[in-house]
Length: 140
Image 1 (cartoon, rainbow, N blue to C red):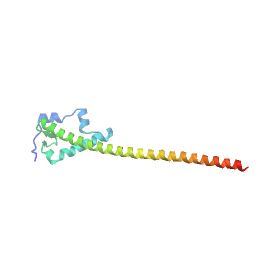
Image 2: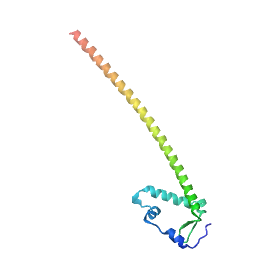
Image 3: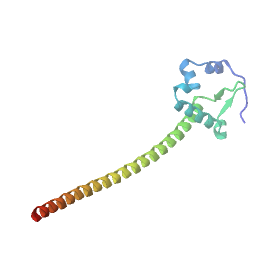
Image 4: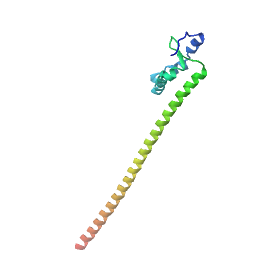
């Protein structure tokens, strides 16, 4: 497992945050759920055993990577996985939209056919009325 070590002044400096970094570290629920969802996903990602082996945790709970490269590699793995998931979701959404467009096109074709049948029926009714009127006029 990970060995615990005492924080150094560098650790203390890294643990101090600006307002911007604090907002990223603890997203505000009022700002929207997307940041909270990604932060939760990242926390779960960091807890995976193969990822947890990449860093150490101090007694204070700070996560410390060996160097910037180790941190960058870990973030890159997370970003790649997240991008793949988003890509899969986007493709699924595109398929759904295609299905809806096909259903809409079929419904439009059906509506056009019904309108055509209605026009034909109206013409047929007008023709019958004209014939009936003509026969009534002849009968007088």
